[in-house]
Image (cartoon, rainbow, N blue to C red; front, side, top):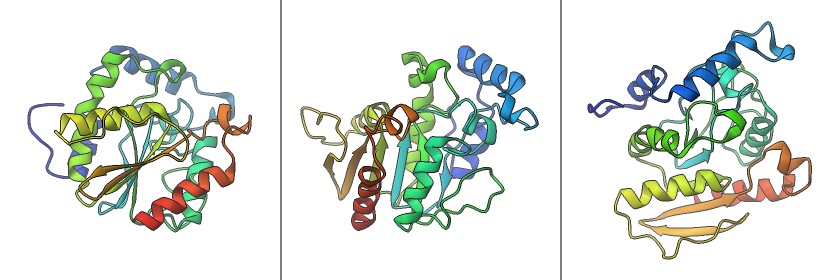
Length: 230
């Protein structure tokens, strides 16, 4: 990100989608967009960094890892067009944060209420594993976004990567955080002060949902708690 601080989330998104700071991620996201998956060969892939999505005055912020190669990297909206998104937006709908449970594309009519969905890294990484330098390059975008979400007070981290990224941001903001950092675990709730709460959840990846490590009830319970806190 350039030295000028974005003054709105719209300005941040406009600048974000033009970012080419990480050569490996640029090459990968654009290769996927050219080659495509057979099931989506007729789709026009997004193939760029993916901005956050939702209610600009959200109390709830959902933090993931990065766009999926054939999900958000294809559709251009976080957690949209893949199995993880099916789980997330159904849970958000059940908890009253979304007007519908489906998330298939940017023109599907989905609207979030009092919720914002984002990720620590904005480009689809090979094997879903960003390098530390790529995470650090994206940290400025992540920090600017969270600063602009001025009404946020509940943060749901989907997976350990999102949790550690959010914690690193809070530490960089000078917050007086609990020490040592609480261990990641599904359903863990952390009071980080100033009326802010962090809720931890296993990521709704197929690796977790197909094996039963994460069930619908486990996932839904996190968002019911987020609703109560909001």
